[in-house]
Image 1 (cartoon, rainbow, N blue to C red):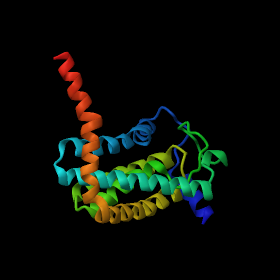
Image 2 (cartoon, helix red, strand yellow):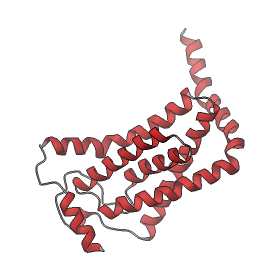
Image 3 (cartoon, one colour):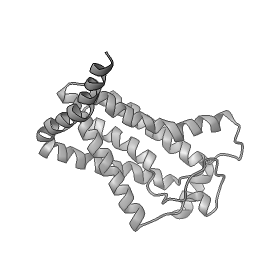
Length: 198
């Protein structure tokens, strides 16, 4: 299995040409596409009604669950990144943290599965496509194995189902607490600043 992983990695991994347009595109996908997740959750919370805020709440729970699972797996079963072996070309500087699963891929796939479970179908398609772009780019740039992305896809599904379960059990009662905290910690300070300067 490891040999298959290596073979697929070498098929996807870039040549050592840091100035090619494809490398620039891959770099943008690998580094910056992930920021759509906190932006999207924040936008859904700030601009949405209670139903959409509950969706944002579930997305946040799913992402936090996924990251917790990833941290536990990395601690118990650490896998070296390709550039530590070394194999292929590494075109993106990265610390030597455990490779499996890919946190970037995991977070985006978790959002995709969660959105699908909430019946936000076109948003789930966008998130899933973004997850595939992240997966390709981080393999292409030499910092992840293909198996890291496959693992992220399935761990994301587990995290999404756990978040869905948590939402069904406690989401309705948790939402007023979250809204109250948001009003106290965000809206009230903003209102005080406006009163002071206006």
